Image (cartoon, rainbow, N blue to C red):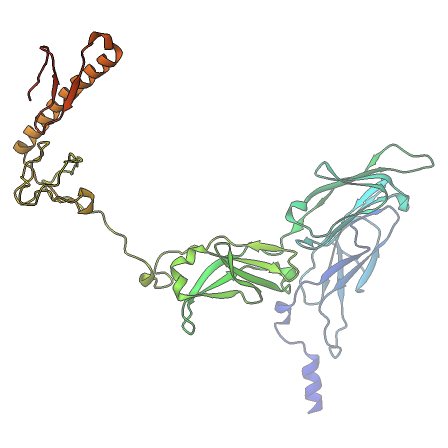
Length: 422
């Protein structure tokens, strides 16, 4: 029995290689550029088989495409190149690019990926740690920081906008102060920790009622253990503040305003914080049955065949309201109404308009009368303007303006009185 158990422990489980991850390759000190003659240490951290396995732990090292003779977990190197490592049964690690410089001044940037929200540190180093004076750091050709003497350039919380090409310049005393010297440019990319979230509808919340929505995003594979918190908003008002849950239930009473919701994802320290777009529904009724919350769209009314578009004119204001029995089918301005459709004594705006059905023969006299009245009104206005411009031409002017219901008249108390009949 014990012999069988020992044999089972010695045999590696099948399919383990398929689940193993890349080993982590690290650099100490953590700078990718060094001076000629310096050494750095590379360390490979990966899968560790059980001690009962017969085969010893093995690590493979590569410089470019060449296999190095060492099988230790860490090695020291001083030559430039691209280094990788591999543990038994696992994939090859990500590379580290090591540069060796013979310049007076070098800019050292981190070898590992820098993610959003993490501190970014770089240093400008003189030949074998000589002091650098009048130190400038440049980002994409623009000076971003000045120091009187050697100091690291630090960004407390890196952002995607911090990606680019960096350079430094300064002077050294060798033995007297030199002219400004510049380092080689170094490229640096700030990795995205997670993309902007997207708010999606997941379905109906049967237990509580309402609609369940989820704030979806995805962490970078190297940072998948980073905890995220989520908040939900309606317009600019938070409906649930930051919490660990990525789901929220919209109350049934607010389902009609689903598209006014959005969410926000952030790290626990709020060093990285991103908001989603407004919630967009693929279509009413999918994936939810939202018919009960969607009002019917009113359709425009259509005219019956033969009907004409209606036009309305404000009726003349009378001094006394006529009784309902004295109203005739023809108004004072000549507008004819069909029998039984006479206007009432109340204001026209208080009652809904009644469709008119005038015939072509009934409309023609009304139009002719309207044109004739307009011509008379034009002549009256012209005479009033003439009287205002030349008052001396009418020394005994005393006139009254009468507007009977069927004609306009201008009367004077002189033999020159002119009466125009319709």
